[in-house]
Image (cartoon, rainbow, N blue to C red; front, side, top):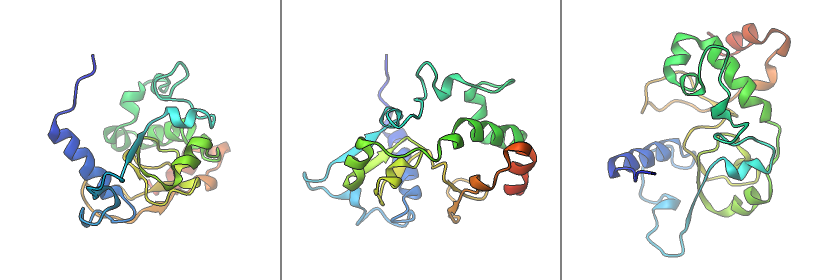
Length: 181
């Protein structure tokens, strides 16, 4: 049975979403497009199923990202800050092979329909942005953007990810060099 999240968890998720919002840079909730009390404001929340039509596997489906780990680790172990600090090359290779390979996929009809909507998504694929939505919030980050390694809550610049500069023939060395590790 699915449990309802406690209000503190929901508030923390909104705080993270607000911090990651490109429009407000985490400065203030007042004036944010999602803060309107108007009944005309609708917030859409999406997940992996939206991008399946674009050829991107879901997380929990048969071929989903959450079912494919690495040779030595489960996906739940791989997708952590601890893995990044303990084994950055394994972490970067896993992300590159599982997610970055889909960076050139295009949005589908649902992404375009959501392009002018208030949107929070769990997806990291960036397809909502490619479809034209400038103000969406991706609560898990985006594969096309990176930040320097930092403590949660610190404001740091958001940079374009250097995926196109990766040398597939020397993947590990290339990733470590590009990410300055």
